[in-house]
Length: 399
Image 1: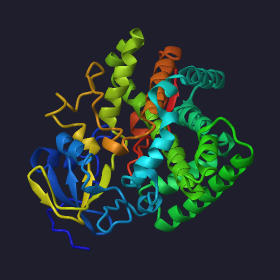
Image 2: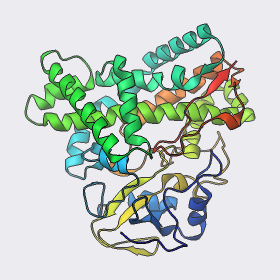
Image 3: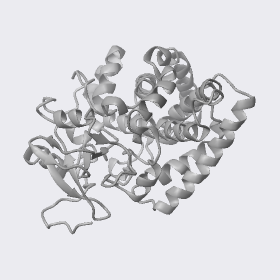
């Protein structure tokens, strides 16, 4: 542990605008794209902000995603505990083996076959909102149930336990949770999923966890404990990220009425608009974390083996050398090469699922309620600044 110098910034940094990365991180992007920062516990790490450098780092075999390695940059006490042993914190070749096992259920063709089911789910939620009447909290009534129901369906997890999963997610992803709280939630979730997987041995379904049990656990190719950790990641990540993106993206579109009117008039623009919203908002705003296993050079800066690195996706997605006028939301931009889902072998395995959910959710929401608007003043919206996944706590709307 070291004592930071007065001029050395701390990470995470504070935002000024709820829709833009912190000004401090954007300043570093312009002036010092590879720089030292101090973390919550006094340890230091390298913060890398340029698009090309971040993209290159995320494919560098001399970097490890294993949180257990000395020097790994732990950006919060809770997140450091939760990530231990999860798929996105395994290195090759172990990571590649497990990802190949899961891949069939997350292929684009397979996910596209679910689009009709997602459309039906979204329409049912919109029917319920219409019956309820205004005002309504879009997070609780719409943004959260979509990914929760889809994720539970894919994995074979009872949706009725959603409140339990939400509590666990908050313990893991809140920047203010203690390590003890995260550990307790981890034990509860691990035990529950262990019992669920055990039950699938005798009564398998057509879901992902059942397939993993019958194809890999039963044959001895996959340890049951590992399957539990895979399920933990897929469940929590599937719930939280897309729910926050639906709500925050909706709020962002309401603040860009001219572009929203274009989207209402031409639904064919929605897929491109989703990519631009993903780039513009980059809700995984704490970056991707790695530790160097050998000396490497990034942007002309030597990084020694054992030093931690934070690849700042939010800054990279605002790099003017890659995206013209990056601080402007432009639904006509070709933005699919953004880094909101990461890059390389650890790119989000559920990206295709999230894209379908977002495209369907936004398009059908504004088609059903073209007059949708905030039901409270904007300055009353509570943004989740401390969470590892950025978003809004509630979003009261009317139409």
